Image (tube, rainbow, N blue to C red; front, side):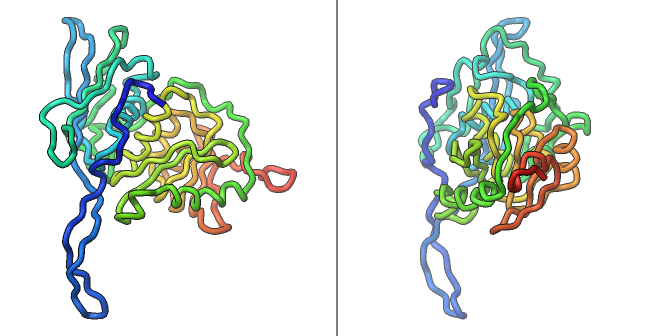
Length: 294
C-alpha cells in the first residue's frame, strides 16, 4: 500500500548491536547483543494558513526508527487533525540525515490546501515519552477526540478459537522483538483472523499509530480486530475508537478508563488473552459460543 507516496518502509535502524557482559551462573562472558533503538522523532506540519503556507512543529515523540511516515500519519489521524489520506499531499524526512539511519529524525507532513487545521485540538507539551502519549496533554478535556465516523455498526462476530489464535500469530510476526525482546507490537487482523499488518515500537501508542497510518486509506476499520502485545490503556482504546475498530484484544490487563471508554463506544474489549483463556470486559455480543452469542 502506498497511500501518500512513501518509499520509506524499512526497519533500518530499529536495532543496534552492542558489546555487553553476560553473567551466567556467576561467570562473566563478553558478547554482543541487539538492542531496540529509541530516538526522537519531530513531526512538522506544512499547511495553508490565513497568510499562506506555514510550517509548525507539533510533536516530538520517542520512537523506534522505521515506518516514520505511517507514525506521523497515524498520529495526525488519531489526534483528529486529519480525517482521510486524501488530506495528505506528501510526507518526507527533512533536515540533516543521521548517519546510522540514512535519514533525519524530522518528518514533514504537507497537507492539502483545502485542509482547515485546528491546532487548538492538539493541546500538548512539546515532548512525548515513548511510554505514554497522553502524558503531555495540557488538560483533561484534551484526552478525548471525536471520531469522524459514526459509532460502530460492525456486524463482525468471531469464535473464541479465532481470538485464542491471535497471540501466536502476533508473536510469529514480531521480527524485531525476536532480535531484541524490547518492543511492543500492535497488529491488525481481518474478521477471518488473517494478519493485515503489524508494527513494533518502543512505545505502545507509536506501534498503534503506525498500524493506523498504514491503514489510513481503508478507514473506517469496522470489520477488523486489533491485537496488542501488552496492557490496554485508555489512549490505545481512544486511538482504536478513532478508526472504529470493533474488537480490541491484548495479552495484558485493561485500565478502568479503557473499559469505560470501550463500553461507551460499543467496543469489544478482551484482556488477559493467554492460551485458551481470556476475559471479556465489554461487547460480549461479538464473541460466538456454539450457536449463541455471549
